[in-house]
Image 1 (cartoon, rainbow over the protein chains, first blue to last red):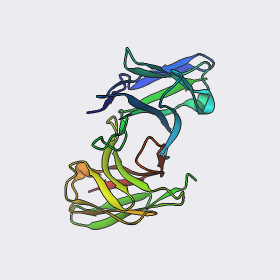
Image 2: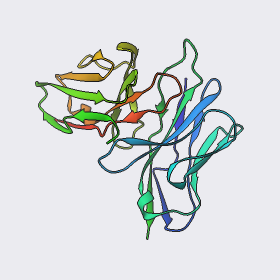
Image 3: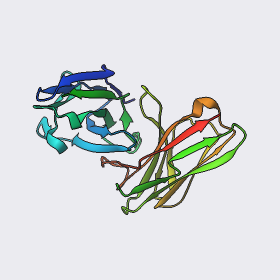
Image 4: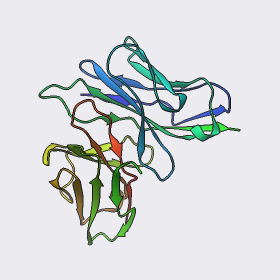
Length: 117
Length: 113
């Protein structure tokens, strides 16, 4: 079974400060990991993904995430937050697919990021 | 626009009504999905279609009935719903059911009275 935990319902950060949104996962094998963002009245938008290779993944809008296999974490980070980054962020995971593996992503419950001016 | 269009954007229905949600993708993708989004809960995967064949069904109550007539269209037929079914229903598509990025529609906000 695959699962994702986002331990924080909300993260507050001042504009210009670094931000971190936490995600831990559980899979039976090796994971595919994703971050999505949802702005008000919109669907989810893809930010970045980890499949294999470099543990530090860079994505859209200056976001990056670090894959840590020993801690089973995939935290989302940005060096300097913008007010426009305020949104709902979702982490998602999937076991590397096999013939009997689940085919779709499992999402976390989301973390609301609030960036104050 | 993401290339995935959902209609209607808002729907209010009584518990005895029958309605349908529609999703259309213009991306040439082969896989389509229905997810349910409720506040402060993980997105719940409902159904997965690959090349018009249902490949995953996550123990969804029979009052939700999906239909995928072709690889560009996906429907969710609703009948005798309960108030707890009120949620945002998101459609998504991907190139296939591998490790590909999902493209989401804006969602259909359903309220069951």
